[in-house]
Image 1 (spheres, chains in turn yellow, red):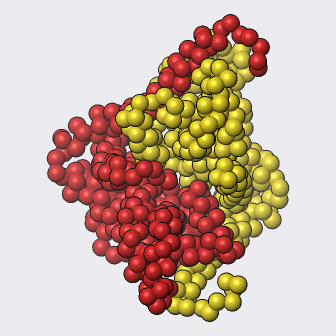
Image 2 (image 1 turned 60 degrees about the vertical axis):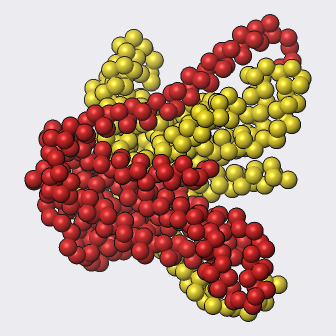
Image 3 (image 1 turned 180 degrees about the vertical axis):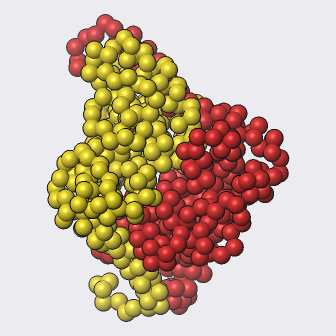
Length: 309
Length: 278
């Protein structure tokens, strides 16, 4: 029916703008693909599954494989989510259920300030304060007394490592993840709470039941939080150590896709295939970011629809 | 689950304690950051005085970076805000059509999109053809960052207006464009303005999209939008990687300036709202 409507001025002005936005996005995908093509053709799948970084002035000697960066993106984001999830959930529950009215608002504001704070501030704080702090109080003791556990079996020399990046990312995504969980937790009908307490549940048991009820929202919070962590560039590149290192050892320096791009793109034009390789890395990040966010947004929407009935 | 557990009360106590403790853990970093940046940045600014805000880099100041931040923010909002308003209104006007729904989804994806990718995209389409880093390339990258925020806020703000106002407008025989711009937009003014400010706050604090687009300019004030320009976050990023303690001091001072600007814009904004999308 709507399609039959006659076009008016608004359509004529707004449609080109919408077109531009979609073209911009499609253009982005195209630019990444086109620029990645030389490296994809030259190295094939090895580009994504091998860990090698050999820059050379002769194109024939150049070999790149970004497996370490792919792993680093995944690993640091995983660490971040594992740390952030319990904190975010507890934070949300505290704000909704237990904080007095005044504190409730203050905590929500603080959380939003954290979510909006420029990432470079996290970066400078992370590089100069958090890394030395973690090295001295967490990594060195763990290495000294628990290095028989493989995860801790790496000397934390500089402190710049997967672990530092994971912790910094956890701090950065917690306000974001907790905002999603909080919103969902607030939407739970009051009768559910009453019901839980009416059958004699303790606060712990009631919270467990209620969190179970918003599980889809928690999962989409995890997914979207993961997406944020994967895409974060500046703060991570300042604390991760920027070394090609394909390992699960927490205290080893590493790379992520975004920090690899930030770090190498500036001098990549000196080599034949490096720019293209970095675009291929960007293409992978593009694909991951797009998939993760579409799934997360979709889940969240579906859940909201179910609740609002 | 329904087994009788004699420790239920103890578990509850432990649970409440843990919740409280984790809440403190969640917000503690913010205070630590505020504290450190002030502690490290303030002495630098006090020592150098007004030269810190107006001087060039070799004079010990970040004047060009401050000017560059304002220039880029201004340019990007000049281009981005009108576009974003149209996009927001479009998705408000077409909530059920396929394109309208896709627009909404695209905006949400753009909000979460890795910003470094925006940077190298703009590098490929603007910087390389132009042959130089430039303010206009940086501004273009920031447009892509700020647009989804402004558009989503516009959309939400207009959706909050009772439908009867729209009907009243049409009943008067106004065209759609008049209804949208003369009746609904002024009513949604507050929400739209919020979106604009949040978008600007985001854009002003971004580093990654500017790494390979704006270039950097710290020894003189920007004079042309086709020449490289520096911003505060970009300057901080470059200074952190320098080995010199003098540069680190400047970085802390610049961080304090950036943080104060952000908080001065953000806190009043946030206080006047129930919730924000970031």
